[in-house]
Length: 339
Ligand code: PHE
Image (cartoon, rainbow, N blue to C red; front, side):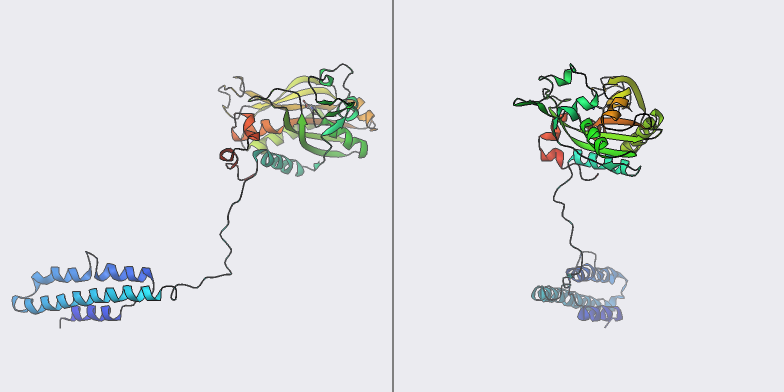
C-alpha cells in the first residue's frame, strides 16, 4: 500500500469527534470539496502508468473509508448529545440583564450632586407645599410682587398662606433658619408655576438650588464655582457669562448663561439664535434674607443660585422638547443608561 494512503487511512480510523467543532474539522480534512483525498486524485498523473490502477483503487477505498467514518462520527455525536458537552459552571457570574435606565432628569440631578459634593456641598430638601414666609416673605419679596398673584402661583383657596412652592429658594430659608454658617448646600426639587405647557415651559419642573454662606464669600467665589460646575457637567469647553438681573433675595443678581451646547454659537431655536442659553439665576444673598434667618449679615456673606434641571438635561443630551420628560415614552427613556 502507498505509504501516504496508509497514513491517511490510519488517521481516519483513529478519528474521534466529541463536539461539533471536532466533527467539522474532520469534515474539512476528509470530506469537503478540497480535502486531502481529492489531492491524492490530483497526484494520479505523476504516478507511473503500471502503478496507476493499484493507486486509484487504494485512493477509492480510502475515500469510502473516510465517508463511512464520517457517518459513524455523526451518529456517535448524536447519541452522545448532552453527555460529552462541557458541564455547566454554576460558579460563573450570570450574564447581566438590564431592566431599565435612569430618567434623564435623575441622571442629571445625580451628576449635579456628584460635582458639588466634591467641593464640600451637602444635600438638603424642603416641602413642595410651602408657606408664604419660606417661599416669599423671608426671601424679601415685596407685597405686590407678581409671583404672589393667583394667576402665577398655585395657592390653596382655603388658606392663602399656603402655595405650591414656585422655586427651591424656599429651602435656602429652611437651611439658614436651622443651621449655622459655614453652610454649603444643594437643594434639588420639584417646583410649580401656573404656566401653559409647551416645548419650553411646564407647570411642574425641577430646580437645583445652591447656597454658600460663610465669612468672606464673594462674587468671585460664585463665578468660579459656577464655572467649575459648567466645565464638569458638560465635559467640554463651555463659555459662561453673567448678565445683571434682579431677584428680591440677592444683591447683586445675575442670570447665568452658557454657550449653546446644541449649535455651538451657530444659532438655533434653543438659543433663539443668540448662541447663549440661560440656565438659571444667581447672586449674593441679600443681607435682609440673612437677617430674616437669624444670621449676622455683618459677619457673613453668601452666594446662591437656582438652575433648571430640565434645561441642563436638554443641553446635556440635545433634547429639544421639554414635554418628552413627562410623556413616559420608552423609546425616549431607554436611551439614557448612565449618569
Ligand atoms: N429662585 C430663582 C428662580 O426661580 C433663581 C435664583 C435662585 C436666583 C437663587 C438667585 C439665587 O428664578
